[in-house]
Amino acid sequence: MKSFLKLFILLFLLSCSKNQTPTFNTITPQGFSLEANDYSITVTHTSINEASNVNIYKGYCDNELSLYETIGIGENYIDLQTGFSEEVYYKISFVNSEGVESDFSEVKSISGVEPINNVRSQNVTNRPIGIHYADYHFNSQRFTRIKQIFTIHELPTLENGDEYDGGLYWNFYNGIINDNIGFYFGIQTLVSGDPDGQASKGVIFSRWKTRDISNYRLSEGGWGQSAGYEGDFIGIRKEFDWNIGTYEIEIKMIESDDLGDWYGLFIRDIEDEDFTYVGSIRFEHGSIKGIRSGAGTWTEIYGAPSSMEFPRWHVSIDDVKINNSEEPERIQSRYFEEVWQSNQFDDYTNIFTPDGKEVHFLMGPYVKRFHQSGNIVTSSSMNQNNCVSYEDITAEYP
Image (cartoon, rainbow, N blue to C red; front, side):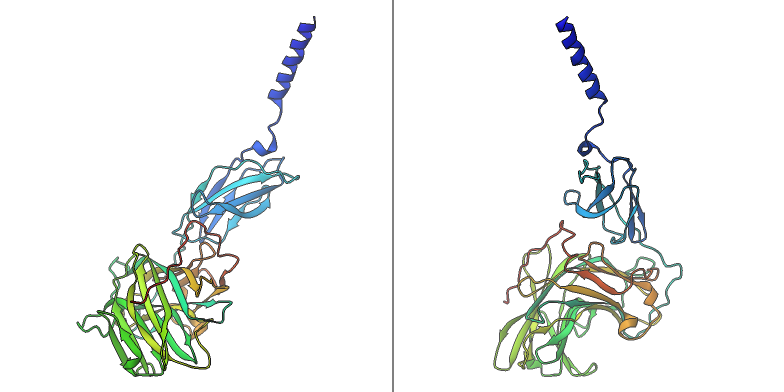
């Protein structure tokens, strides 16, 4: 009888255990889905009574997701910080009223959608036209080195797919060195003054308030310019066949003499170990030393043939550092009409960040202005994309 009773109790307990609701931390969220929209992604799920909140995890590779947002159970979430060409990864978990978190859902990925302008842009005239602007604000008000990682996502092209053969300039920093001496540097589609008479892709570096060519030093294969059509200036130029890909460009003070400080310009494909030395320019000593914070990058159309199509071009600044790896406190985007005056391409340009760090510039005959200007990147948003990191390698002056 006792053996029968023990058997009965054992069977009863086993039956109860089979019918128990699984503990909350073993529940796997169901109905998790993603929907792509214009520069946004909608995250949805199927709610359960036991949960009160949903944790949304986000990342830019499938093994580096971190907590991004917490919403109420049953709510949909629209993520407005996405691009259209980058894949974004998500997973979710449920949280009950006691703060216990469930198991994770599967990881899913999707890209946002680029909205299309229903009205095609006008053609380009032959006057210079500014397009995008982004200003860098650092905690350090002066510095002697700035480096940027940038990506050419799309070459400048026309509607039929042909490469645009007009002038495009992407300046990386248009600022002040020492006592109010203006300078800029960047890449162009048509670098003028080449001794062989052929304008081609290359890199330029210029300063104002002088035409004295003793203030520049050329690298092998480079050439200089001294002119007055934009105020007195000198500049160095060098061919560099940039293409779709990621590059690093750096300007830094390399030495000083009795007259001033010499700044050198260097560039490399991110896959290459060595930098290409472009040349260097001297800036007279003053009461203040270094590059002033608060200036930034912009794109410009110049020297376009009359009635040429407005080209499509997609580029991005992926990383910015000054001195000993200091990042910007914030990056502020602006459009041409806020800097100078309105032009016919205001509605065909867009500046956005897909990850709180990269700043993307997009232009084209069917591009639609979607994001307004403002603080597009802040110091708190820069660590969201942990998939890609760049070692801070400084160029060596030859």
